[in-house]
Amino acid sequence: MCQMLAMNCNTPTDIVFSFEGFRRRAGMTDCHSDGFGIAFFEGKGVRVFRDDKPGSISPIADCVKQYHIKSLNVIAHIRKATQGVVNIENTHPFIREIWGENWVFAHNGNLNQLPDLSNCYCSPIGNTDSEVAFCYMAAQLKQRFCKKPTEQEIFTAIKELAMELSAYGTFNFLLSNGEWMIAHCSTNLHYITRQAPFGKAERIDDNNVIDFRNYVKDTDKVTIVTTFPLTKNEIWTKMEHGGLVMFKDGMKVREIVGKPKVAVDDGTLGIAKIAA
Amino acid sequence: MCQMLAMNCNTPTDIVFSFEGFRRRAGMTDCHSDGFGIAFFEGKGVRVFRDDKPGSISPIADCVKQYHIKSLNVIAHIRKATQGVVNIENTHPFIREIWGENWVFAHNGNLNQLPDLSNCYCSPIGNTDSEVAFCYMAAQLKQRFCKKPTEQEIFTAIKELAMELSAYGTFNFLLSNGEWMIAHCSTNLHYITRQAPFGKAERIDDNNVIDFRNYVKDTDKVTIVTTFPLTKNEIWTKMEHGGLVMFKDGMKVREIVGKPKVAVDDGTLGIAKIAA
Image (tube, rainbow over all chains, first blue to last red; front, side, top):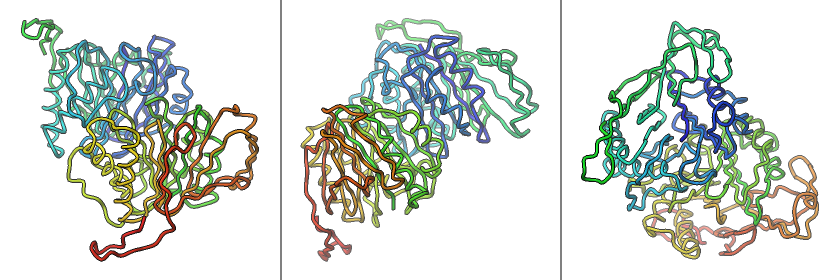
């Protein structure tokens, strides 16, 4: 499995406090050492940094720390390989162009069965289940909508695709087009929205403390989504199985509340279908 | 206009000697200061670094220098904006997935007319003529061949697309899928293949000298392609207008020799068509 981290805000924000705790889990406080990647949106453009070295010691991750890039939407991933060897092409997040936008995707989980990719317009480059799932989503979205539809139509389409792919296994994912951030939970995903009045936070992984009042304005809204909480003195919201949330400008704008996980075999597919 | 740099080798090689001279042209020895980008293939994967700051002073470019990434295929670009504002999404090189491979593209020139992109499977994210041209090439390639064809078929198809797009303006470009490097010349493109016996080279932009014998093996073959030569004591091959070369494992493997540029108005298109 892997761990994921995302940020969505209403003002370009530096993710280094969260990223520095998170990347310790890539070899120091946890074992997600099979490469890391982080993508920062800047307008419609994306800066991506990846390495097949553990995130905790990668010189590329050091570079990310030093540069303090500010962004409205960030997705990071530290990998514990389940399918696919450890190399750059298997390193999340994955990127595809959809309707003239960069779409960035990271996955935590494992799909036991893969969707059919018989069209030739979107193919995986590496050999992970995650990239196949993302290619399937991209191809389906392009097929359903030749041009970019409304935000509600996108959310509904992604809900349907998330339910379809969740039937194949564990499918926690983060997805952003630079305007919004979507989080889907199968097993573990937590979020927190920080806004005024801001206070202090203490990192779980190294006890480092930050006082957000020294860095932000009262109008700032910053949502962090991650596999497991990063701070010990804040209240994180745990998403339920099948939960899907869209964040925009740092706030939750759309939500499908999930349910505690129950396995149901409907007897038609020969695989356990998950009630969502 | 812009300047471009590429490397193709038979063993993973560090491009820092060339890149350090090249990036001085982004604000120090020349005026290509509207952002820079560099993509390193690693297997089928790509590491990409971009910045909208001038390549000569960008901290991201400093990071590239420090890390000494070794690669078989590299494409770098320093931008002097002609079409499209200065931002990350307009920063070359551009990347698209074609037949399950990363294809990386950089352009130097200016297209006065743009090809039709009425299909919805490949759209530009930024607003440069360069990205439109690349999307057109990607869409055409996918349309002509549902699965990856032979290398000769790819070379022939790219020759046809290069000729077609060259009719719209200046179209120097570099293109790689991680296996080979293709260079197309409209106006300025030079290359050199370094192989045993290796010697010393002196950079034009800062007189820095390297003795390759300290860094390479006798079996190494390294081709550098660039807009204007980077060293003063070596003999660079100048490509002619319409010239197209494919390099693989550091050596030229396919070539269409161009001709000195002559403008011919055939009277049917209402635009100057270039004899290639």
